[in-house]
Image (tube, rainbow, N blue to C red):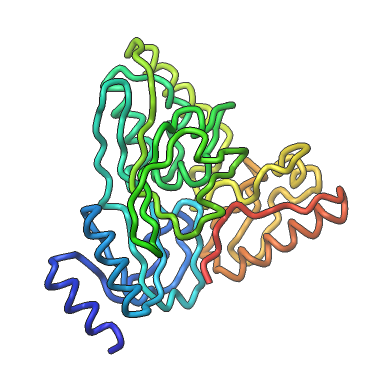
Length: 301
C-alpha cells in the first residue's frame, strides 16, 4: 500500500486517521465518495509535521474545514484529506477572541456572547469554520469578516514558516482575501477584535439573525450554502429567480424554492447532478442578462 509509511508515522505520533472515509460524511452537501485517508490533527504542531511529511513524500493532500462550501466527486478523492475539525479551541484575550481554524463560527459567536463581547453577532448561524470565514471574507447582514478580523496566524506550506498577517495585509474585498491568491497559505488561527457590550443585547441580535436565516434559507435540506458569488451589479439569487430557475431540478439536485441562490440535495444528488445544474444556471443567466456567474462552491477534483 502506498500509504504504509504514512500510516506508520501517524500511529507512531498517535494521530487519529480513517481509511476510505466517505467524503459525503465530511461535507454539508452530503455528496462524495471515499477519500484514501482522512487525518484529524488536534494540535497546531501536528499540522506542521503532517504537512512536512506529506511534502517530503510527495503525497497529494488537501485541507478541509467544516465542508460547508465543498463538494467531492462521487468516486471520491485519491489522496489525503487533512480535517481541521479537531483544531477547534477558542480563547479570550482582553476584548478579542482567538479561534483555531477548525472552530465552528457559531461556537465562536456563543463564546463571545458568554464573555459579553459584541461585533460578531452577524455571523451566528453561518455553518462553517473560522478558517473558511477568514479565507472567504464571509459576510451576512451587511457585515463581513473584515469588520472583526484583526490578526491571522499563517503556515506557509512551501517554506513551513509560521507568521502573522494583520489588518490590511488580509487584502479584503467582497468575498475575497489574500489567501485566495496565495494557495500555499494555511490559516492556523485568527484573532477577532470585538468590543464589550450588554450580554442581553448580544443575545437578542444573535436570535434575530438566526430567525432571519431560518426564514430565508433552505436549512431543511443538505446544501453548500450560496452557490455563486455576488456579481458586481445585483444578486445572483435574483438573477436566477428572474430567469425562472427556482425549483429547476437535475437528478437529485434542485434550485431551492426558498432561496434561488442555493442548490439543495433534494434526493440523493450526485456530483455530476450538481455540476450539470450549475452549468445550466450559468448558461441561462448569461444568455438572458449577459452576466457570467462565478461559483462560490469549491469543487474538489
